[in-house]
Length: 297
Image 1 (cartoon, rainbow, N blue to C red):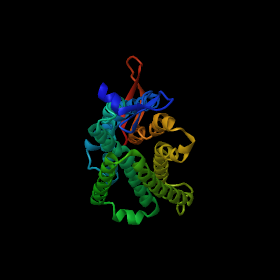
Image 2 (cartoon, helix red, strand yellow):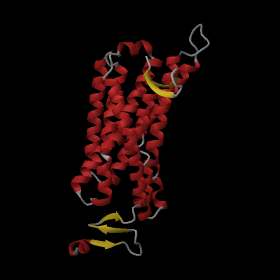
Image 3 (tube, rainbow, N blue to C red):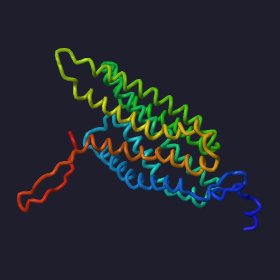
Image 4 (cartoon, helix red, strand yellow):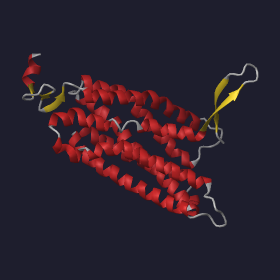
C-alpha cells in the first residue's frame, strides 16, 4: 500500500482519475463500463454466429468456393476477437498496469481493428471484379489466389497487431486512422463502380441481373459496417482539444471505440441471412408453427 501511494498522485482538483507511474488511470470507469457492456453483448451474439458460419462453410457437402475463403478467415478473426473480451474487461478493471496483459489484449484487439476491415475490403474487391470485369474475374477465380490473398492479409494483420501491442495508444491511432481511411476509399470506389454498372441494363433486358444486385447490396452493407464501426474512433481525435484530458481518456475514447467491436457480430449475421432461410411451417397434426432452418441452394 505504501509503495502504491509513493508511485501514484492524484490529479489536482479531480477525483475521477489518478496518475500511476506517469500514466493516467481512470477511477470512475463509466465509459469503460459502457464499452465492456457492448463487448459482452457482441461476444454473446457474435461468437456463436461466427462459429455457425465456420460450421456451415467447413461442413459443406461441396467444395468451398473461392468467394467463401475470405468469409472463413473473417469468421476466425472475429471469433478470436470475441474470445478476447473477458481478458479485455479484466485488463481495464484489474490489470491496467500489467504490461503482459496489455500486450495480449491489444494484440488480439488488432484482429478486429485491422484484420476485420481488411478482409471486408477483400470481399468488396472480389464483388467489384465479378461485376465490373466478369471475364477477367473468371481467369482469377482459382482458390489459390484467395489463399495467397488471405495469407498476405494475415501477415499484415499480425504486423499491425504486434505494432499496436508494443506502442503507446496515442501513437497507434494515427496509423489506424490512415489504414482505415485507405481501405474505406477502396471500398467507396468499388461501391460506386458497381453502382455505375448496375445502372446500365444488360443488352436486350430491362432488368438488372439478380447477382449484380446482390453484389451491390453486399458491398453497400460492408461499406456501412466499416463506416459505423471505425470512423467514430477516428473522428474523435480532431475534437480532442475541446475536452479535458480526464473526460477524453475516461469517457470519450471508450464510448467511441465501443463501435469497433460489433462488426464481429454484424458481419456473420449478414452472411447467415444470405445462406439460411427462415420459414414457418404448420404441422397437420396439431397445428403449431415451427421455425425451421434450411440452407439455401
